[in-house]
Length: 192
Image 1: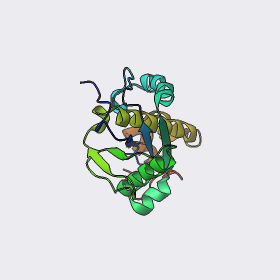
Image 2 (image 1 turned 135 degrees about the vertical axis):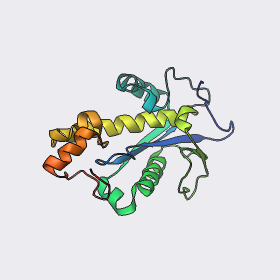
Image 3 (image 1 turned 120 degrees about the vertical axis):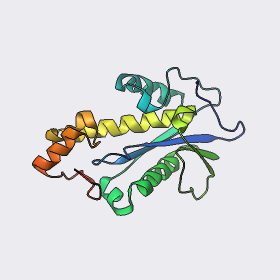
Image 4 (image 1 turned 120 degrees about the horizontal axis):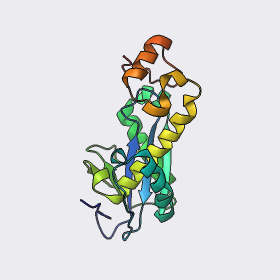
C-alpha cells in the first residue's frame, strides 16, 4: 500500500513520530515534518520497516523535500521524571514548536496524544505506514536517535549501543548485570 500524502487537502499538516520509547537507555527523540501535498518520496515507509542503509539514503531526500522539519530530544533523566509516554508527547511538542512554519493540523503516530495548546491533532494508529509526513518523521527521529546512541556507545562499549540502540537485548541486559547501569540508563525502567 502506498503512503497517503495528506489527511485533509486544505490544511498545513505536520506528521509527528518518535523513536526510543521501548529503550532502557538514552533519550526519546521526536520529529515533526511538513511535506508538500504533492510530495513523492520513493521507498519511504515506517522507519522500522527500512534498513539503516535505506533510512540513511532517505534522510537528505526528506530534508530537501520538506517544507519544514524539526527534531527534538527528551533526556533519560526527564523520562524518569515524567514517564516515557509523557516524555514522548513532550518531545513531539518541542519538535512542533521548532518548525519554521506553524502547522494547522498534527498527524500523530499512535492512538494517544497530549493535545498541543494551539494546534489540533489527529491520532493515526500505525500512521507511519499510512501517511508520508508521519513516515518521514519516523525516519528523522530514528536516524537522529541512532546517531546519538552511536556517539555515546564509545563511553560504554560493553552495552553494545552501536547495535542495540539502547533496546533491552539479551547482551545489553547481561552487560547491565556485569557492569551495573550507566549514566544514560533510565532508572525507572526494568533493566533485567
